[in-house]
Figure (spheres, rainbow, N blue to C red):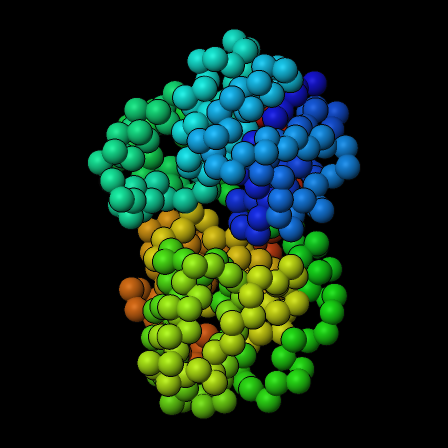
Length: 358
């Protein structure tokens, strides 16, 4: 049996955290002894960590303050595999790799398209140097899409044999069960159609260009309303944009929602307006809820999702404009293809195969 230590910054709401909790739930206990360390033990997904997984609180405010606690824990547990996700934490653990027990292997999972992260950083040249020199030292790098994998190989000189693509798992059964909990959030709203967008209120998610497209939609559908689920530093800026566009009454910021699936089940349309992504879980989850979707093409795995599921007519290039067919039910065979490409069982098997091989 292999001992695997997962390390994350926290379990605050986010796609990467949700994927890690899913793996902790479903990896085979006959093959793996699972442990979880958190830089800061907080977040809504803590409640979903299985009872048989020990959780270690490193009690650090930032990754930079967690070097010593991480190394102490790794030396104490002597895991066969350390599994990390999210860029800065990945880089920190790669730096510590030389000090880990000699048998310990390091897997890093990248949650975003690295070129885009580097481009938007305050010192692109420095971060490109770090990724280029450090990432190839990991034993394995999990990429969420073929796009991300090629980005690492071509732009950061990661050896091809070290970069693998494993799609994010979609737990369709659990999503649908949660979607049936609670009442329709639009029940007491006279608006229609109801459009939903979900994510942290940060530049990456592109809510500014979604708001920019709303006046055009309102000309055709004056009773439409946009509901934005999420929190973040750009909330006030986005609200000011609503004022400038004259759409304050047509946009509702409802904050973080522990169960976004009930919103997706009853929405008329889900919109993904991001500037870049790794592989957007929320798009897959909207499709699992049978919510009609539209996405703007961008660097990352979104186009792969739309190609795999036969939804290319719902992918917009560069600029978002609303077409009436976006509100139609999802294409035939879409859910069958979702299970084939992104189903929980298949994805967990892939992870187990690679974890066993190291």
